[in-house]
Image (cartoon, rainbow, N blue to C red):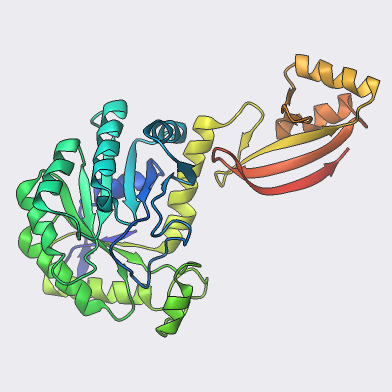
Length: 356
């Protein structure tokens, strides 16, 4: 993530003014709470999947949830120190959003940092005050219509929250981005984030119909990065002081998500699971032979705490116990190495036969 805010002797200046929500996202310390898929906009570049967008569903990270209790359970399991509330537009369901914010602060304490994304369409002065009173720390506006950026000023004047703008870097949008930065600078906004425009199954057709092409790695729109960097240079030349941050899509995929998965894995892995360097978890499944001798050996291994009954007819063990299990239970079943995301329930990635 780059942050450029000024120029001195032709050198780029930086200062420690990154939004707190970004500071916590970087090491994967934030749970992502998808509060609802309802939204009053229809942005052609929206990357939200079709089974979420415009559906009133809730997810925490990758887990679908249906209650406050499940939200607390997943945030706890993830070992998070904060949360980002997103959608859809969370303010399309204001009562639910307020309830979740108050619940998170009550359970995890005032230091539990919460930031929220909204277009501003539903952000009345009264609702902004209610969000502030509920404990929301930071609000990020994505003005989808002319005039919605004015909600920034409303929030600054009426709340104690940190207030900024976060938008995608649409190729060719330098002047629009610069106008937003000028506005933020003039009203005392706290930050501006510009994200590399991502390609997903949900938006690829809309993007293609408008002439956009994917970049070399296929997950971003070609020209988005260059547009953002040109805009940032323009802002520097103009002397705009509001902190501007560029977040590459690769940063989200390879760093933020990986770190969050690793935190989740380490805080919630089971005794027979190994947390891998990429944040996934792995274990070994044993499909047993139902002979008298094998039943006896496997029972002994259970008593020793080496293997664990799954309750579904097979056994589970740690990958580092493979050699010992093979030595003790040779010919007593097939072994499979399983890798999965540390979700609840586990989301299977691959299952490979290791042999008997």
